[in-house]
Image 1 (cartoon, rainbow, N blue to C red):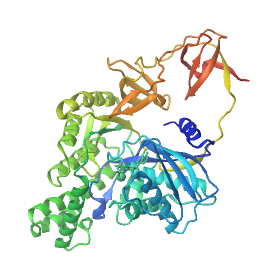
Image 2 (image 1 turned 135 degrees about the horizontal axis):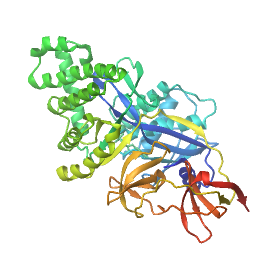
Image 3 (image 1 turned 30 degrees about the horizontal axis):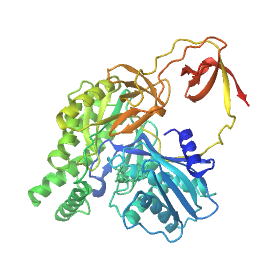
Image 4 (image 1 turned 90 degrees about the vertical axis):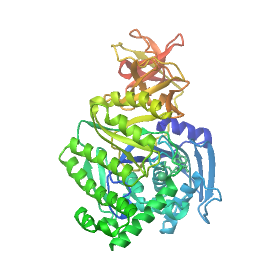
Length: 502
Ligand code: ADP
Ligand code: MG
């Protein structure tokens, strides 16, 4: 949700103007799965989906929150924090306050609305994004509190593992804190040493949310962790990370068959991550893609954490021209798959997934493309311009790309971001027609994008000198109303002499 819209929602809920925006991204892991708890290597990338908090500091030690995703309030005092009996989203927020205070930071309360466009519980780490956005919100509210991104990551991880009680590695929090635009982050999970690695040019990462529940995920996760620990113990190393492929091959007879499979995945996956880093640095997308696909096969056949839905998404991707590689990402048993694809073939892939995947699985996928985003941050919000209305006078009206001709509430396929204007997307309607839609008008419903009720697709023809009322403006485009009450879009640059009207 756009910060302006969030600020308006904050005003509705808390009756005041918001003064800060705190945000943190979700992530995908390009390669290096189930290696983190084996003290090995991972290569995640922050995505453009984020959790955002818009709010203002309070004078007391209360934190008051409203999650727009859950349509639910939560409030807690900074002293005497304890988790709820029934786990809830507020526990992630309380956990952050608890971890920060435990580390010796004195905090001030705040109130905020929360909104995330990361699918929740799909393995894109909305939980780490929420935690990091909370750390940022405390920094925005507490004067002189400044944390290094890696400290913010540790505190967020402490919140999830020590307070909420989820057994998880620190990868999600590291990437949500330390992401860099255009780069993935290579992390050594033993030392937490990390390095940015540029994404090769001309390729896109397409994320396919399988829409399949991850019901087996947590029990299988604990089982796999235990299996890896047993394998390491039998092989006489502190963690599987300590073995090279050659060392493992020399000793594999020591292990029973099941543990051999598990250990082989981890040892070879670590080697693949190191090779993937080299391939990225060399701009070798073919190699990078092949490594991703090999990772998937290993997770499916040796580590046995894939699922029919994930395998279907990967198979469809791999049979699409321009796709270099594809794999499941995250712990497995549902969640998301990713594909590395030639930029020019993104729509082809998205369209094929949208049509093929439901046929094969009976599930509805959600497909989106993401560039590598930057890690958590916060900024001050300027108070809104309170002038009641504006008048704008049209200068001239050059021809423009048409907005999408679709109906309000219609399901659309969101394809690729418009390279020319941020936050505009090329989309297709149900007839396959293509056009641009501003992200303000998207709503997600049952894993589809639908157009909001106030969606307006018209382009408004104007004559030079005509007076129009400016309703909203987004990134170079303005939604205006003419004297007859007709609404439509015009490029903002055709509007001259914006004046306040009393
Ligand atoms: P994942 O991290 O893969 O999305 P998790 O189960 O680890 O899935 O975390 C999801 C949880 O994070 C949600 O159940 C909720 O408690 C919390 N959460 C994520 N996004 C939001 C949000 N926008 N508002 C409130 N809570 C959120
Ligand atoms: Mg999570």
